[in-house]
Amino acid sequence: MAEPHTIQVDIVSAEGEIFSGRATMVVAPASQGDIGVAPRHAPLLSMLKPGEVRVHTPDGAEHFFFVGGGAIEVQPNKVTVLADTAMRAKDIDEAAALAAKQRAEEALKDRSGHITQAEALAELARAAAQLKIIARLRKMHS
Amino acid sequence: MPGTKEIRAKITSVKNTQKITKAMQMVATSKMRRAQERMRAARPYAEKMRNVIGHLTQANPDYRSPYLQGRETVANVGIIVVSTDRGLAGGLNANVFKQTLFLMREWQAKGAGVKLCVVGAKGMAFFRRLDVPILAHVTHLGDRPHVKDLIGTVKVMLDAYRAGELDRLFLVNAEFVNTMTQKPSVTQLLPAQSLDTEALQEHWDYLYEPEAAQILDDLLMRYIESQVYRAAVENVASEMAARMVAMKAASDNAGKLIGEMQLIYNKARQAAITKELSEIVSGAAAV
Image 1: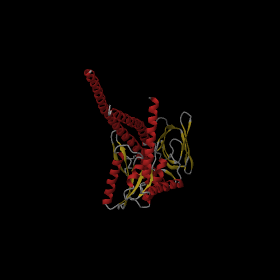
Image 2: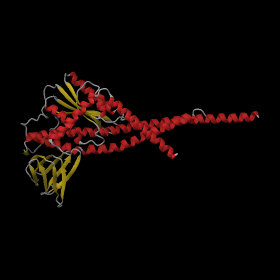
Image 3: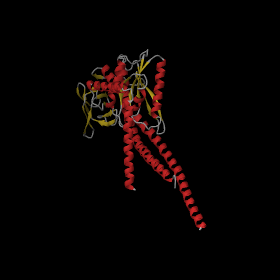
Image 4: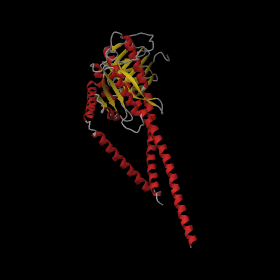
């Protein structure tokens, strides 16, 4: 271990690493109240509420990170925060699932192929417009 | 000069097309690089998640999460297919669909029903023609997919799995091998496998907030979401790489075509000049 009174902290989300380094203290919004984690904390696993994670680094600075929820794992010499990038709540998830289902149903219902034809027409119109612009540009330059 | 004007018009039109394909190639190249970075950025989360879940399952051998427990009889199989929204990417989507059809046939031959979840507009256009139920669908994730756009889609499949409507869940997407190669890959999402941690020496149990079972299920849900997210990002990288190669081929072809036509044009021009000259010379000789 580098220093006896620090703890390795990794904050990661599915879309990227947010923080990695050593800290003297970490405060996180656990699902049943904020918890402070100092080095040699007992192993703990908890879900997180949306809120901020505070990391006190050995140089005395304090870093804040917003998390939309997630989980925290504490081992005696290591803290891992698995942060959610999105706000999570049961009803929000439920609504998103419903929307995904509806999209599938709507897309399936329209078996006639109107959508693809409309899309093709739109694509064609766009291409024609682009060609027109190119032609105009050429005329201007020549 | 008959013909030369037409040839010239054709050359300019091919040149315009070449400009477009060249621009698309360059755009795809820069987008591919960014997508590759995002692929790399997603890796630590998945690794840490795997570790935590590994610890958790070892500490709680008595709780069997439905996400981890295999079912003996497989009556229904779910497949999440990741495709692109736009075309002009060579055979990328076609290969993924072929692999998916292969997987579907394999399970149908065993007597299992197949249900799909489609990511991407191209996939929807393809699979709606088949007589297969599509449970969920999401398009227009863009070049930067976000986890939050995928949560609902994945949840539909997870709920179906928990309710016993699905017994297996697979993920099919284009794997980014390198710039020149993208191959379709099939991953089994549920029941989750390969979560065994490398020989954990220390053994401890955690303090839990709330209870262990709840946390394990929540984590597994996020783990699977992150896998689908990774697949979506990887698919974007593959799409850009495939488009880059396809557009490079198109630009090269256009260049070749222009060269050939230029040759024909020059010949026609030369012939016209020669003809005119000989006409003048013979005219002068006649006088």
